[in-house]
Image (cartoon, one colour):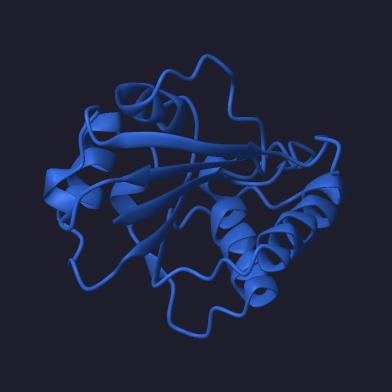
Length: 163
């Protein structure tokens, strides 16, 4: 069994027009939502075996905050291919992951994340900033993940009411 958590970076700032897209930081809402989502994952006792993220500043900061909140103490893998890539690159990254890892967090950007998720499950919602989609795959190898063995588990996001 493999578990994949697809996470979109928290809300970023557009305040400084001189910054490149890659260097945009989190805004006030993003700085509040990233720890919130980390705490929600921690309450569910979810800690990844591997955490892969885009290195763009808004993604990197989100990943570092969530990692801290869930108690992930291993190095985050910052993969430049996730930034401004096609969804096929995300497929490649996931499928090439070492099978010793059972639970993966993959943090990146839309629209690629939404397209990736839609390839595996029927999912017609937008992954909003700091949204987390959880998919379980009934297989033992990341290279074997497919629509046939994928199961939608949850979709959480900052404004979703908690029970």
